[in-house]
Amino acid sequence: MATVAPTRVRIGSDVKTLGEWPGGIELEGRLRLRPGREVDVVDTGPDAPASPRRAVVWSWTVVAVGRNGPLFRGICHWT
Image (tube, rainbow, N blue to C red; front, side, top):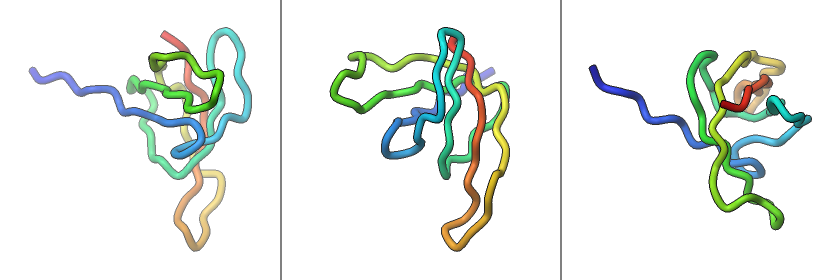
């Protein structure tokens, strides 16, 4: 059985951060993520860690639909 590589999610270009706490992060963006899947969260800011952090998508729902397509929001828990 083949394994699926985690999706790379870049803060700043793919999504924006709405909140973060020791156990996870709340994100919003145009990417369509699937609950239960692992993602590699890459922070592109000046004080960002050198390596991505792995998280599991806990929830991901449509919050708006507009001319540019759907806007999603959800919670990811750090692994």
